[in-house]
Length: 145
View 1 (cartoon, helix red, strand yellow):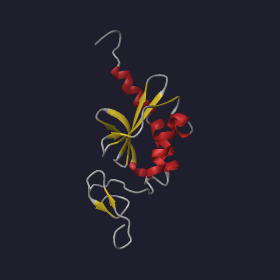
View 2 (cartoon, rainbow, N blue to C red):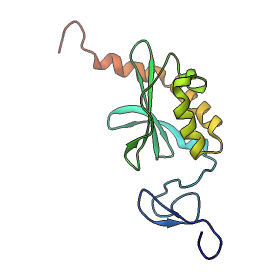
View 3 (cartoon, one colour):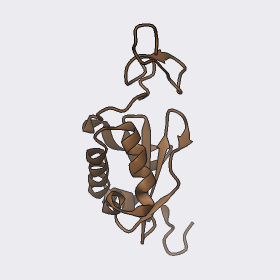
View 4 (tube, one colour):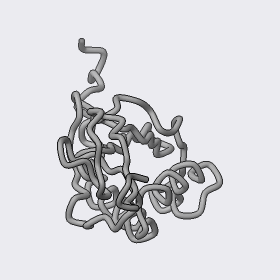
């Protein structure tokens, strides 16, 4: 706390001092708050398809033919927040024991974590064909290289 009784935070991304839920310099989320759901979009990061959350987090989405795989990254701090999460379907993220760490990470950051998670599942289901299509294009056909 500073002398005025307000909470102060140091941004782990840029080192600036902030008095609000987001850093005024770089926009990094410092405190729990509501996430505007329109800031959750399907995108690509370094050639990997996934979902961008607030341009701060990135949920890597992969499908190997049998299972869906997810990994949460903090793009501003350049680190992994979860290991690979393996599920049979995207909706398993809401209840699977394997996805507990993902749900906890969302609860730490957002007061509307359940809505955020539901939006993530909807986006993965809506873009499933595009994710699967990328895999088919990447695999060589009939032994061709």
